Amino acid sequence: MKMKNLLVKRLSLICYRSFQTTCPTFTVPPTITSPSLNSITDDVDIAIAGGGLVGSAMALALASSPAFQNRKILLLESQSKLPQIVSKTQPYSNRVYALSPGTIDLFQKLGAFELMKSIRVQKVAQSLISFDQSLNNDPLAYIVENDVIQYAILERLKALNIQPLLNSKIKQFEYDKVNQNSVLLHFENRSSIRTKLLIASDGYQSTIRELAKISTMKWDYDQFGIVATVQLADDTSDVYKRPGVISLTERLRSYWHQALPETNYTTIRQLPPVLINIEPNSRAAFPLSLLNANQYVRPRLALIGDSAHRIHPMAGQGVNMGFTDVQCLTEILESAVRDGADYGSLMYLINYERKRQSNVMAKLISIDSLNRLYSTNFIPLVALRSVGLSFVNEFPSFKNFFAKRAAYDA
Image (cartoon, rainbow, N blue to C red; front, side, top):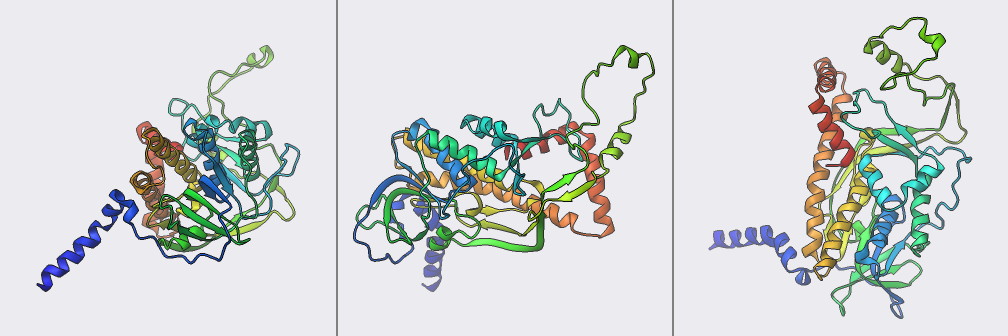
C-alpha cells in the first residue's frame, strides 16, 4: 500500500506540467498579496514590462502584426526617460551590440533598420575564421549602439501611436479572481491595470520572474567585461583585402604585380590598431554570469530576453537571443489569434517555451564550454582549441554550419 501511494505521488509530479498545458484554468497560481486599491484603472490586451531593447522590440513586433492591430498593447518602463534624439554628431556610446543577420532581418521587417542606418552602423566583415562570400553574402554582423537601436524602435512605435508608459514599476501582480482570463498588475504609485497577457522583459534581476516564483539555473564567472570608447590613430574601416578585380591606373599597371600569400594578410590583420585616446567617463565594467529560467511561461505570463536567460558575451549572442524570443513569441501569439483561441493560455504559450528552451540551452552549453576552454592554460587544451579553429577554417561545410547557427540563432 505504501509503495502504491509513492507511485501515485510520483506520477502526480510527473504529470503536473502536462496537466497545466491542457487545463490551464485549473492551475493554482502563486499567491501574491494585492495592495489596497479603489478600482482598476484600465484594461489592455497585452502588457510588456520593461522598455529596453528586447521589450520595446516586442511591443513593435506586436503593434506591427495584422493580428494585433485592433488590440491594445502597453509598454511599461520603470525609468523616467528613454532616448529622445540621436544624431550622427553625438559622441559614440560604450554600449554597443553586434546584431546578427537574423536580427537585422527582424528589424528590416519592422521598419527600424533603415532608421538605424540613417544614423550610424558599422559592418563586421572580419573574423579569425574567414567566411567567403560564397558562404555568406551578408556581413557577419552590424555593430550598433544601444541608443541608436532604442531610438529607431521608439520612432517606429511612435508612428504606430504607441508611447511607453514611464515611471511604471510593477510592485505586485495576481491572477484576477473574477475574470480568470486576465492578471492584475499593481504599480508602486498604487494604480493598477488588467491584462490578458503579461510579457516580462525586465532584465536579469527580473521582478516579474521573482514574483512568479520561477526558479533559475545560474552562476557567476568571476569575470568582468570591460568596455570603453576609444580613439584610434587610423581609420579601422580600411580593408587589406578586397574580393574581385581591383582596377589600377595605366601608370600603375605598367609596373609589376605579385600575388601575396594569405598568411601575410592574416599576420597584418592581427596587428592591433594604435590607440591614441580613451574618451573621458566611457570606461565601465560589468560582471559576467549565466542564467536560465527553468520555466519561460506560466498562464498569462511569458519571459523574454534577460528575464529568461543570460549568456556569456564572448560570442555576442545575448541580445540576439532576446530578439529571437521576440520573433518566436510573436509567431505563436499570431497563431493563437488566427485560431480564434486565447493567446494568454498555457496551451499556446507552452509552445514558445519548448522552442526557445531547447535552442537557448544548446547555446548556453556551447558558449559556456568555449569560455572554459579559452580560460585555461592547460597545454593540451590550448593545442586542441588552436587545431580546432584551423580545422574549421579549412572546411567550407563546417564554416557554413557555424555561420548559419550564429547568424540566425538556429
